[in-house]
Length: 131
Image (cartoon, rainbow, N blue to C red; front, side, top):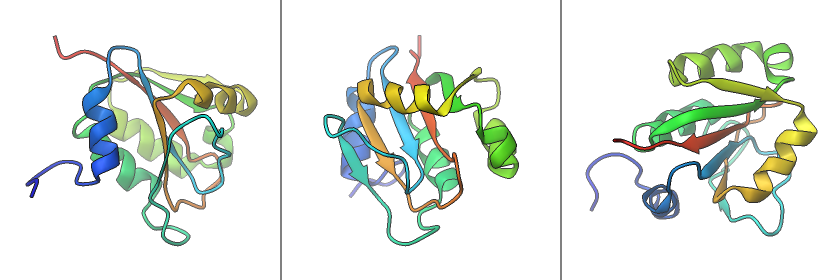
């Protein structure tokens, strides 16, 4: 059994297969996921698992050089936005309109659906390199 990091097989597999500039989406329970994009569904019930807990675990394994959020997040969900910026630290955050965000999910390696029920609690993590 794996001792640390991401225990979910599907998420661990996606992270291990990502290259520079690949995208991984961590989404709330309501984000529409394009049929052609891989869905990793973690949602159990409203709030479980949370968006922020899922981001925190993914960040423990994934090198991220940029994050993309909907420009609506800071206004509609300021607490989530503040906590996300703290988790991301020095990672640049790009804000785009929500419709643009949804379109960008089409090219992601996967969308991880959480049980989060907070509006606009979604992020696209762009993979960096460790060298």
